[in-house]
Length: 209
Image 1 (cartoon, one colour):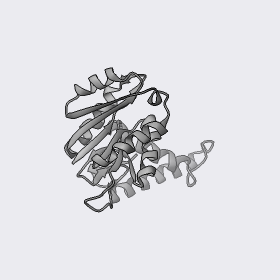
Image 2 (spheres, one colour; image 1 turned 135 degrees about the vertical axis):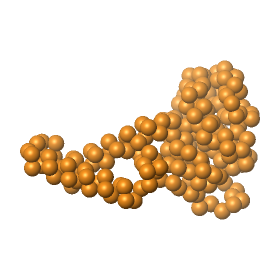
Image 3 (tube, helix red, strand yellow; image 1 turned 90 degrees about the horizontal axis):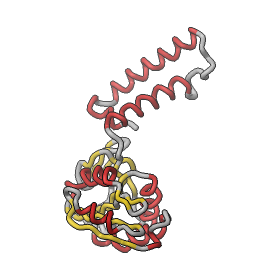
Image 4 (spheres, helix red, strand yellow; image 1 turned 180 degrees about the horizontal axis):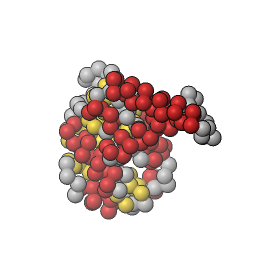
């Protein structure tokens, strides 16, 4: 298996944190080739070679890739896609702009906010998801690797549930501050916790985003 990892490069500088987290997630899938595409990205490419788990680094140093335009970079990735089984990128604003265009050109799918790679076609994301592509597939599988820590993902999910059941369509408005409304909100929260515990195993709660 071969993986193409799109490095996060801004202004010719490698975002080693985001790229490194994505690299750690995909390292088990096979040889990882890192693509640095930007204007003056030779320094970023040199930094990418120092990351653990990198097999090869491609440096696409061109003015066309330095203007934060997704289309030129997407065309570049598509031209390289035939040599790879997986195409991954850290889940950043730039990659969320690029990878959907790559997927459209390849007639493929994108799995967003991957927090763990289980095997070549199974990933932990919003829930555990499995690609339905048939092996061997002529098209690479694309996915965005979440750079958010597991504890932050869990906190965000819990906050989202609390907000929805407190102020969503079935909860009181923010102005409903009477004791009676407060009690109803507390009861809904208790029912939600009971529901979550009945359908989600404790080890999977942190996957909720």
